[in-house]
Each structure stands twice: as structure tokens, then as C-alpha cells.
Length: 115
Image (cartoon, rainbow, N blue to C red; front, side, top):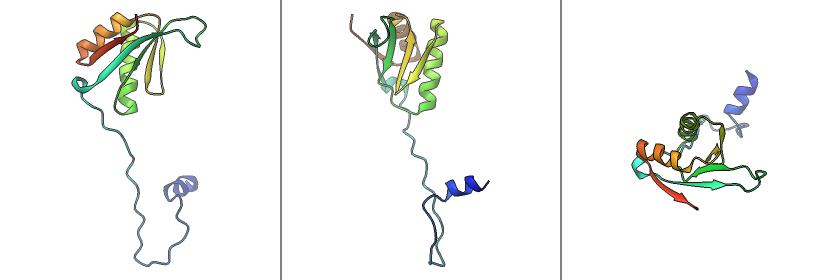
């Protein structure tokens, strides 16, 4: 419990002001844009992956939880594995057309990059 309290009042050691009250900062979270305003890019990538193809979806603007939910949806619909890293959804294999169709059905604007 002591560690939680220490984290809560991080940086405050002592105040001589009798009327001082600690103000917590609100967590900064980027608001997720609606699907119609999102411009997602779908591309195939083989770099640094031992020649294995990975479909990348980038350009998502919003909270991390919403991006994780989108990644989970794409992986389930394609029936393969993948990951969500650095603001991108990686789906194992070449599923550019299928992912573009899924995203379009969800209301996203999709642009395919590369072949």
C-alpha cells in the first residue's frame, strides 16, 4: 500500500502552504475518431521478417484499447495470428484484400499501399 501512495503523490515532498491540496493530473488519452473519419493504410511487409509476409494496418487515430480491439477483430476474421505494436496492427500472411473488405464493412476509409 505504501508504494501505491508514493506513486499517487509523485514529486510532492513537503508544502509549507496550509491551504495546499494536491491536484491530480488527468490521464491524457487521445480521443478515438469515428470510423468514417479514419484513413487506414493496408500494406504487405516482408522486411526484417525472414521473408515471411505480414499485412500491416497503420494510420489509426485513437486510444490503445480501441486499436487492440480492431487488431483482435482482424485476426479473428482472418483466422491467423498477429500483434499490435507501435500503433500498427500486424496480421500474419498476405490478407490485404480481405482486411480491406473487413475494414470497409466496418465503415473505415481504406487505402492499399503497394502491389
